[in-house]
Image (cartoon, rainbow, N blue to C red; front, side, top):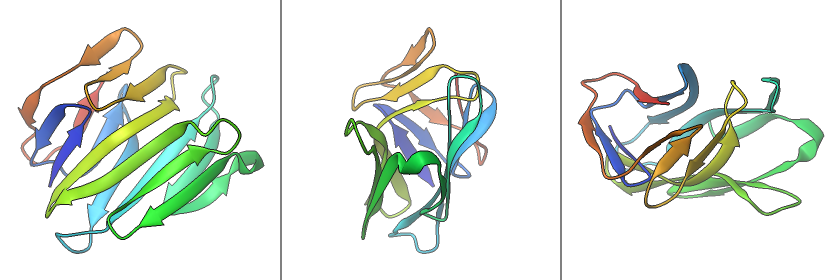
Amino acid sequence: MDMEIGSNVYRNTDGTVEVEGVPQLTVTLRKPEGPPMVNFITFDEVGRVTSKMVESTLQFNERRSLDLARTPTGLKLTHTESGRVVLHVEMQAPNHVVVKQASFITTKGHTMDISLIEWKVDKRRMSGGNTDVKGGAVAIG
């Protein structure tokens, strides 16, 4: 599957996104046209797990701080109080998943931001990349 994260395209991925060396997001497809099945973990500033999503369902949601909205082509996870988008994943085409927007904390306590033009984490950012990961994971940070 191909993944688009910000304006960066990662071709031939296994659907895993490693952020600062830790698998934090996994997307699988039961059918090439979707919907994507998402596994995702969020952390707080000290590396403690605050939420866990398994197959696009919130299994753990500390203090019910997140809202999950699913559509036929994706999902959007938002912070309940602020309305900030924590993760927005959509199918753009068969076998092509787009992480449209995100803002979450990594296991190392850094903020990971994804917009339509780039991704950035800590002091690293990337925009406009096109990488063939040859069946492996996407490595960010």
